[in-house]
Image (cartoon, rainbow, N blue to C red; front, side, top):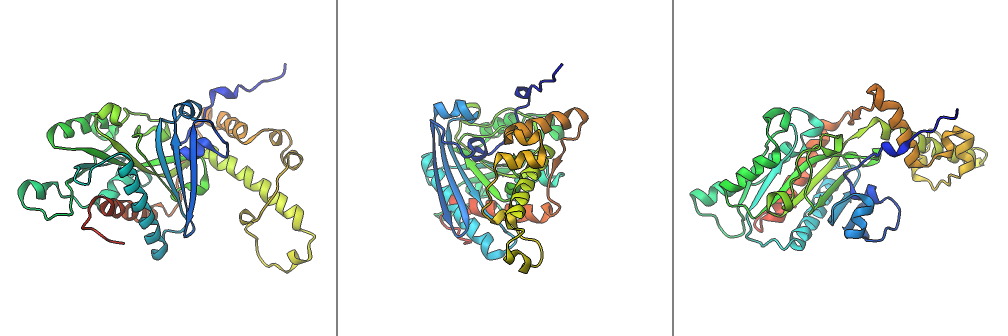
Length: 343
């Protein structure tokens, strides 16, 4: 009897709207791409019809993709662009210049890949206490910040904690910062997404908690996140795609005279490589007949039952998280306060 694999059960998800859309033109989704100083910015507007197709909430998603933020000058460029588009999102949400803000650093400070939220708060300019106890000059808005931890530490839903804070202090809108999950190796620690749709903490790794959004909190919520982890399914499936590209590039160029003059390995990802179905079948046989999504779902079926679909992060994550915390934290300061200018 022929074995049929039911792939419909294995729906791999992503926190990034641009990954949910892919390269398709989808009715109900408006997509605009810009490139500034080798930094890619994608504006996505999801309408009702599009929301149902990609399983993302109706709203606006801005994604900033970059490369090496260990370079100081490049990092400052990313910060400047992040500030610009955060201001744009605040304007789209019709948030007044004097509106008070509560910044929530989501995540677990004991786990480096999940510590983006708490680490970012170290860079936030908090002013609420100054408004309470003293005079604050013009140009600063009322800002509070809190790192509520995770449910495993507190035993309390983060959404419930935020509601209680809002009941205690005057808050007009909320900004959340959290680590996300991606379906692409190349986007890990190299992508910032901001959205006005809110966030469900822990959903990227399957620990979905109560949503933090205007529907549940009663205040506008802007969610900022960076994918800091990727699962083993993604690593394996991306490696298969890289093998296709490497094999295709090598096969096309191996006999060219110039190839004999090049010393060392060539970065085939920066070359224009055409991959056809026959090549896939030649290299991987039966697996070569599957499309990208089917390959991922098949690997998921193989790894998940034995507990090997691990969540993985780059070895330099400690250093990168500090850089990301600087970009996001000081970018928020520049967007919220007129008197602050670290750029």
